[in-house]
Amino acid sequence: MSLTKDDVRKIAFLARIRVPDERLEPLAGELNNIVGWVEQLGEVNTDGVEPMTSVVETETPMRKDEVTEGGITDKVLSNAPDGEGPFYGVPKVVE
Image (cartoon, rainbow, N blue to C red; front, side, top):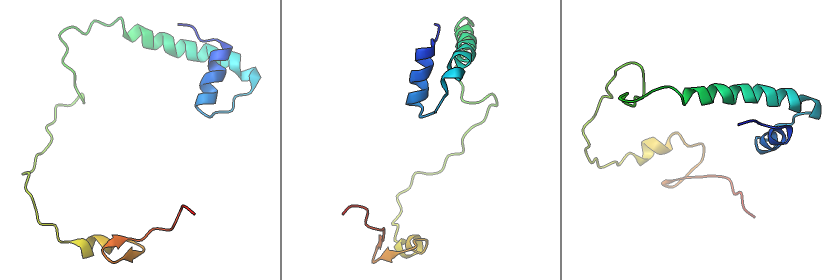
C-alpha cells in the first residue's frame, strides 16, 4: 500500500491536523515507511502463539460479587460541587 499526497491530505483533515502543502510529500514518505513496517509484522509466523494482554504473567485479583445495600448517598454527594437533594446539580446547557 502506498499513500499519496492526496491520501495524506485526507488523513490530516480527518485528524484535524493542519499540514502545509510543502510538508505533504515528505509526510507521505514517512507514513509509507511506517505502513511498510506494519506490513512486515503480518509476515511473522504466529501459529501456536496464545494471545496475551501482557508480557508478564499476572492474574487479576478477584473479589466476591456481592450485592450491597448502598445507602451512601450522602457520602457520594459530599464530593459534588452542587448537590440538589439526592442528585448532582449541573449547570443548564440547553436553552
